[in-house]
Length: 254
Length: 234
Image (tube, rainbow over all chains, first blue to last red; front, side, top):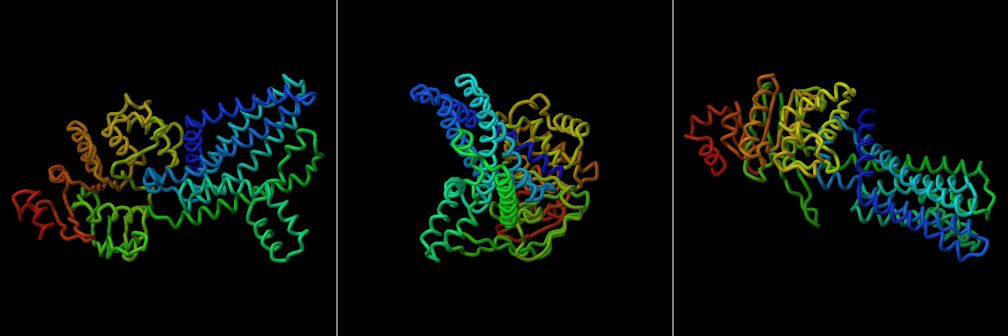
């Protein structure tokens, strides 16, 4: 447990002190502020436009941070041979993988909280709406990205950092679409395509189930009970992805 | 203390995964409180033997006994150590102490003591990316000693050090010996080996081809360097 805490703290320091992260966050805030311009050219829909555009920016930049940082977390330790120092001490591979994940979760929380609060303040100042839904939507984006982080760490234990990052992005995109693809193939009544899309649906995390952006901008009423169950599903998915990553990482030699 | 018996290691290399045997039956014995020098030309298998001993690699066959109660009693410094750029020397040693479960007060005391021991107290707050090679070598030794280990394994501890740094590292090894610790190190600097070691082993192409005391080696040649050349070229 103490090893897990040590690795978590170290990973948090590693990722939060990364200068590239600061640059990405600055760009993200500029992009969110860009929603002001879009709001100014949309008659009567200023608040909605700022929220809509801002949440897309939070998702996009959050995804960049999640995927590229997660893909390098394990890889960098192996490449730079800091694993020699770690694993010559009583540190288990499970504590290493889990600590890396939790540490990045901490950094992601700081990054998304910063972007979310900035967006919240912008909507409040410009449109006069103290929209708690914006913050809830950012929280749900955070949950989605945690699943992407876990999957990317899993991929990074098997291949290169670039491959892991690409696959992480693919999982995010597929996770947004898998539910709709399954529904569409069911309409087609072809058992093979339906079986295939079911397999994809089971393997890829259903991220769209916790996407509440439409609810945040007032286009949809949200069923919170169901969303809670999907959050539990994603948390279970994260545990499985990290367990598989640990199994693969245990087999590695340095 | 360390007993290595019939250690073999096969690795797959290249696209065709050709199997190459890099350890071909290593037998080695290091006694408690020895300062032991593991010598050999590049590619002889010294680092691989140490990695297998630490569990960083798995043996294909054979066995390694460290003679201590798990890795909590072992300290290791890899060759050309690279550490976390974004941490200061003090933070890095604190991180290593955390890995051994040190509580805050004990961790603080231990880290400050080690920083003084390796002569890095003044650079303790500087990020490791600004450290010179010699400073990294010293912080590497400090992290290997953070848990006050019974067994210390150092891979090329003198590399990159200036004469002052080398003397300091030699003093550290001597102090460890005086305190009853067992030290095994790889080195190409035979004068340091002569000065520090009680026993040595010489490896060549994945095998230990000679092991014994430094006195025994010097009985067969005028210098350790000459003896080493005799063994590796015979």
